Length: 182
Image (cartoon, rainbow, N blue to C red; front, top):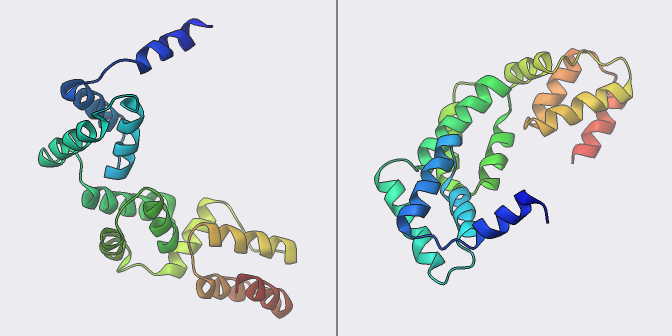
């Protein structure tokens, strides 16, 4: 067994108390923001072998919430704004990412709604295309590539079709792409 594997096996058998698990959680939050669900998942792996694991995890999470180190509402707001401004992602992509991270639906709806209220989706999609250096498609294959990229980025079919129509993509290609989208 290699040294690092040996150390990992020994570390996994450490019996964490509340203070040790709290310190670990604060360190994890210092490295990057996390949702409540993500942090719980991480902490559960650390104390999986302990009988009091559920009470330890819940205790640490409650303490972090009281100290305002852990707040899904703030997380969702920051995440939504950053994804819109930096990544130029559409609303749907941000919603699905937040759901995958375990954020509650009501919180997602409010945070994403606030971040995307004044956004022109077509303009945001055009900014995304510029950011990804995707240009006007010359053929059906390139049009499909642009279409897929915009769908993955979280833009609606109506917005994508409007962009492709402005680029004078032929009607046959648009019809095919629209059929595939449905």
